Length: 338
Image (tube, rainbow, N blue to C red):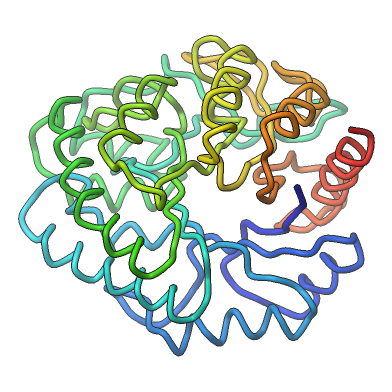
């Protein structure tokens, strides 16, 4: 069990130095800014890996290709086969470059928040979601609401999608088609695919059903893939915001941990569950962070942990150096104490 820094899309010496100074050994990048509008190339991936290694760290995983790389595959519309072919090539190139994990989600309408300036502890700003503020079943029209204006990726994906509502049944068909096409390639390439829960875990947003919103959905996905290359990017915050809160997080760890299906963890939390929740500092959310670390250890988890989202605190940088240092130190103390 170890920590990584991440949730940035470009490498720079200062950020890597910051991680080393905190005693962090790994790096995760989210949607790295690499050349190519359909796939990632081997040479660019290798350079990323070598840049991290020159700093004495390990590139643990890449999380999320651009939405435009596989939006048609998620939506099940014309052009998905070509996108899947390019996705397969990206997986092969990652394996050749020696990058072991590709994190992904299956949310065509993206991550949604209704505010990024909710008042948290001491006036810190946190993100929040309130389902009453959005129209879940409005397909194209949702691209004009305030949520999509905040998240440009959501707007682009909805505008590229079909006019009709995408049902849960159809989304499951799309996932099965996608995962059965890419899992054999991941096995051959030696790359593990880590599925992120839906965020927020509601039934529908932007006219597109959300299917990864409870424990049973992950069990179903695991059985569909039926592969050692399938596992989870277990985002505690997303799982804590599901119905059941802390108990839901414990259930997921207890079931998937002993199976070796938790490839890495997003260690954050929220206050409340859908339909309304606020992100928060560690230790003031739905679950006990110490209990989750002990539970992870008891299942034999040996992956890496990432702080993921953090509150915006006074005097911080856009990436959140101060807030991330607090989260990293908090998690390091928990690991040392168990």
